Image (cartoon, rainbow, N blue to C red; front, side):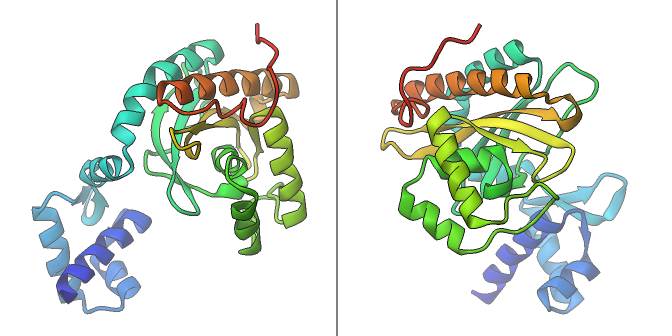
Length: 261
């Protein structure tokens, strides 16, 4: 049983620190290098990890982990419903569109459609996004109950950039703003060069099951563009919520929305 726990922990550590070598992994896990090496060989033979490109002594997780995660979260069905909506949103904005799903007190990027513009935002699938410092995360947070919002705020808010909201009262006020207009914004709060707008997608239970975002280099995100993209992403989230049999994430918080040209 201990070997199984070590293998699962090694897989988590590789995913978090990739690409990583056996020595660094052994230090992180507090285990002998020989034990960790055997675990890595087992994970490699089972298809969970692979050598990093050009660095055969360092390891990365394979897409197998993502596939299992998609089955666990129901993301395969979500992706089938989301991609056509995302493609239309990308066509209307010509910016990168992301789909993220909540996992406990974090959100994870599970799909990406890229812009044709040469300067773009590129985040890897599986990227963990901070709830309070990303548009995707704040959209999901605002779609949760007041009690859940209060519990999240009570845990403390880490700072990532100069614009990260670390004051619980300020973030609570921002949650109210998100609910009023139907979409969240990120003004370089996680990475200074990344700005975004996002809206929550609700499932059949009325709970947030995902968020859709438009992601733009901060240098390109003007206030008028943020407003326009916010309305477009809210429309997209509404359509995806309806496809999944859920309530409209945007209309759950506000009245009729003006049409976007």
